[in-house]
Length: 409
Image (cartoon, rainbow, N blue to C red):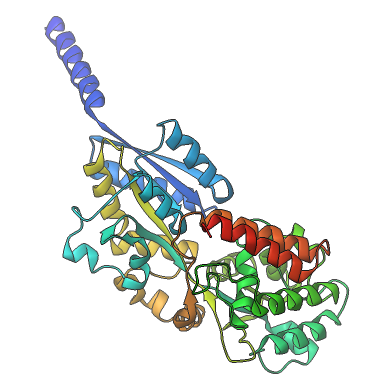
C-alpha cells in the first residue's frame, strides 16, 4: 500500500512536470504610464492564468523613455516578447520590417465594433490592422483657478496673445509662481511647440512633402515661446524640465497654465485633491486656427511569436469593457471602447468632456518612416532656440533641411 502511494505521488509529479513543460509562456512588454501600470497588468495576467491554467503570462514593465531602445535591441537579438505596447507612430517601421503581425484573421465583427474608429484607424495600414489602441489621449490646457483669481483674470485665454498677457499677470504674483509651464526636455518637447505652430497655421509636412518648420508659422511660434521664456513668464530652466516636471509644478500650485493630457486629472485627484483647476481648449491663432495633439499607443503582436493564439486570447480579454474600464480610469486616458465611454464614470466626467470636445481639432503624428528622427531634430532645434544658442529663423531652417533629408527630399 505504501509502494502504491509512492507510485501515485511519483506519477502525479511526472504529470505536473509534463503539464509545466507543455504550458504556453506568454511574454508581454508594457510601457509604464504610472505606478498603477504594473499592478494592473499583473492582475490581468493572474486572471488570465486562472481561466487558462496551461498558460504562464510574464509581464515586463519598461519606462517610456527607453522602451523603443529596448524593443529595438530585443528584436535585433530575437529576444522580443510576444506582445508589446508601442507608440503608434513607430508602427509603420515595424510593419515595413515585417516585425508586427496583422490581427485581422482573429478580429470578429463584434470585436471590431468595440472601438471608436478614430482610435483604431491609426493602426490600419494597407487595409490590415496591426495594432489595438491600448491608450488614447488628446491635449488641452489646464489652468489654476486660484492663481487666475489672485491675478485678476476673469476669462480663460482664447488666443495665444491672451495667454501671454495672462501669464504676465500670474508671474507678477511672486518669484515662486510661473505664468505658463513649458516643457523643453525629453518626450513631446517637439509636440509642446506644435500647439502654437498649428495655431499660426503651420503644417508638420507641407503639401510638397517637405518640412513646414521653415515657415512664417514656425518662426512666429518659436518667437512667441522664446519671448515668454526671456520675459520670465515660464518657469526657469525650460530645457531642463520634462513633461512630468511641469505637471508636478502645476500640482503644487506653482503654474498658472500648462498643456498636457487627461491623465493629469487623475494625478491631481490622487496627489493634489485640494487644487482648484479647470480644463479648456488650447488657444487659437490670429486666423482662428487651433490644434491639439491626438495620441494613441498600440498593443502589437510580433510576427515571430510562437503562441499567437494564446496571445490573441489575452488581448481579447484586455479589450473587454471590464478590463478597459479599469485601465482607462486608473491611468486617466480617454476611452477607446464605446461601452466604456458610456459608463457614468466617464460620460459624466467634466474633464474628459473637455478633452472629448477638442478631438475635432486633433492632429496625429504623420505615419511616415523616420518620424522619431524628425521629432528629435525638431526638439534639438527648439532647445537651441530656448537656450539662446541660435537665431529662430536660422535654427529652424537648419532643422528643416535635416528633416527634408530624412524625408528623402
